[in-house]
Image 1 (cartoon, rainbow, N blue to C red):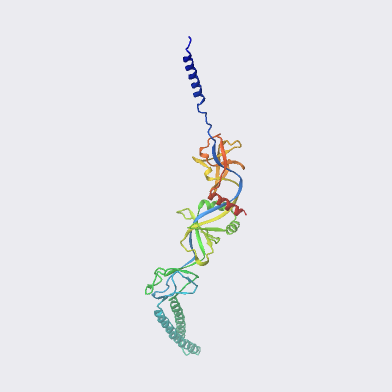
Image 2: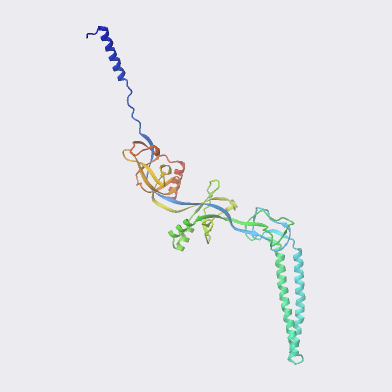
Length: 391
């Protein structure tokens, strides 16, 4: 069939337009590789830090009680101030005790006179008995009277001593150097041995930090140090840090002081005490904080940022990048934590590149773009602390 010139031109134009439209079809776009941050695993010597909550207490807390009954007539110290051993704290009305002392001394003087006469009568009776002037019964009566008089004098002397002690107890003094607490008894109060304490004086330099440790931790420690002498030398050589409630570190280092004799059956924990120098008494009983100590150094430990580790039903895994920038998921075993870092005990080797950030989106065998991981503030602090310890 022959086409007219106009029809041939239309068909040609249609082919040209169709070809042009086909040539403008969008090209396929290849997705960019996932960008991840990696850390290169290298062995480090890391300090193993043990930390526990502590309550501060006075090295000595002296509860001040009245030892005799009477009325307080003066309080002679400033509450909350530093007191020295022997400083007067309270004064109980001494007049009844002065009278009792005077009565005891009078009784002693009377019985001494009676004893002197009985002694003289005894000597005369012995002489007359030897001359066979009096009977043995009369002699024995004189001897018994003299011995009774001597016993009365001894009792009177003891009564005088007790009266002097009681009079002395009316002046209540500080038994130690320390800080006197707020008084619980005031002038005019009737106090005695059965009433509550008048105040408390605490020795605060040094001050004690009381920490509880679990039974498992104590057993592990004894297992690692079975010799009692070596264990004592080791623990007394440790330097302890006190972290205050505001997060600051107390400038003075502490030393181990004592471990309690038993475990608390209710909590399964044991009390340990660490002492810290406390110049100026800036720390006070009742404050809370944390006691921290480096117990050992872990040699050649491999650590990764905690955010690099994924836990799934008690199993741990990290994502490793190979030389071809391919991601591979690897099962690992974890050990202790060091600040923001976490020890890997199995599954990694030195030089492995582990994804610290972005690993959640990485699939097995996926190509990734690698950048170096910038440590967080916590991680930098933990690593810096490690390096200081190593030096």
